[in-house]
Length: 255
Image (cartoon, rainbow, N blue to C red; front, side, top):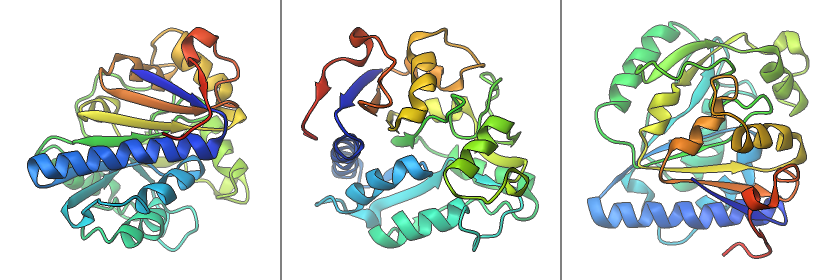
C-alpha cells in the first residue's frame, strides 16, 4: 500500500483521477475492456468530476459495479447511490454496461444476483473511501474479514448513520436506513488495484487508526495495508494526525 498526501482536497482528488484514468486507459489497451468498482459519498465527488473529464478513456469499454446501497431507499431519494452514480459517473462518462444494486425490494436476491455477476471475472480496479468510523464500503466495525460472499446485507452502526446526516444526505438519524447491501471486505481486496480517496479533517482519526494502528475488524479499512497494489490519496487535513513517516511528503502538485 502507498500513501500520497497533498496540500488540498482538490489536488488529492485530481491526482487520484489522473492515476485512475491511466489505469483505465492501460487496462483497455491491454485487454480491450475493464471491470471497475466505483465508490460513492461526498468525499468522492471532486474525484469523479476530474475522472470523467480525463482525456482518452473509452468509457464504452467499462463494465461498472458499485460498493453499496441502502436497503429500502428509492432511487429518486437524494442519498440513493444508484442516483449518485447515474448523475455523477454513468451519464457523465457514457457508461453503457453497469450493474446497479436495487435494494428497494428483495435485497438478498439482488445481492446474490449482482454478486454472481461480479465474481464471474476479475475486477481490474476498485475505488474506495474510508468512513469516519473506519468502515470500508458499508462494512462497519466489527467487519467480517472472512466471508467470501461478494455482497452482504449489513447493519449500519450509529456512527456511520450520523456521518450520513452530517454530510447532508438525510435530515435526521431516524431517516437513515438501518441496513445496506455492501461489497464484502474480501471481495474489495480481490481487485487488481485499489484507488482510495480520503479527504477532510473529520476523517483524520480514522486515517490514523487505519494506517498506524492494528489491522483489525474493529478498524475495517486497516485491511487496505495488506493489498500490494493500493494507493491512498489524502489531503493535509485527513493526514493531520499521522506520523510524518507514514504520510510522507505533503505534495503541492496533482501530478
